[in-house]
Image 1 (tube, helix red, strand yellow):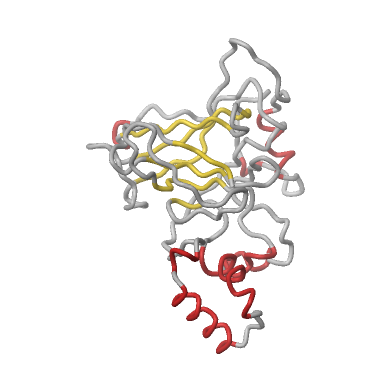
Image 2: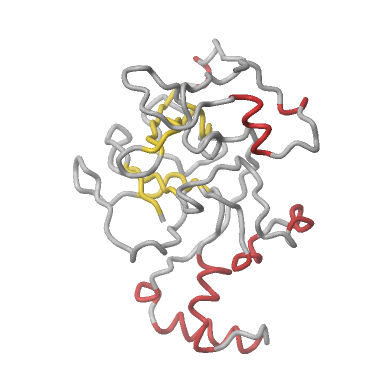
Amino acid sequence: MTDEWNPDALDPSQSLADAKLTRYDPEPWRDIGDVSNAMLPVAQLFTRDFPGLRPPPGKDLLQILWCPVDHDDVMPKTTLVWRTAADVTDILRAAPVPAAAEYGYDYIPFPCKVNPEPIVEYPTDFDELGEESLEQMRQWASREHIGIDPDDVKSWFVSNVCVSPGWKVGGHIRWGTTDPYPQPCPTCGTGTESLLTVASSEWDAATHSWIPYEDQALAGDYSTTVGPGVTIARGYNMILRICPASPDHPHIQLMQ
């Protein structure tokens, strides 16, 4: 293993998977027993960039970590750590190397930067939107002549208008594995809110309308994975949800 990580020094011809393995060379999943497994950084969010975050008093930095092996719910186990950014002075030069990682590299995020961009989303539960909203969608599709079957307007709007794909802070859930269901706080019963969606890809053939202009050159290959390059359970999303009543209450996570 190597304890240095310099993505700028990588061979441009090297695949993302090979680059990760060059950095970590983790063993495949195994029962590591009482051996500690390093938690890996997943996201670092400052309240100045994400004003919708709900920090504890005096905190302005949220760090999200996970153990890079599957746990009982077939997802990596996550930890949320709130800090005061000004107090973080002893900074590690490189992330710790885990003793084991699931599937070799699927749970090892590739270092990248975030450029926050606020967007508007809508729930995919059309019963919540109401028939009037659906009719407005049908009229818009007919007026714009974009070739949508009026009977299929729901699925088109879910993919292209309602919920953005990819990694995001906040927003709505793209349901698919299950129908929408309540996710109350395990401590107080308050309905939880989405904190972070960890996505296996930033787009696919059904969600091309969300591709940023600067990434249009990649649009022809819908299998292209950009950003952190992780895969959740063969291509799903993991959503972390928190209690709006208190940041001290435990968060929950689900897969869709």
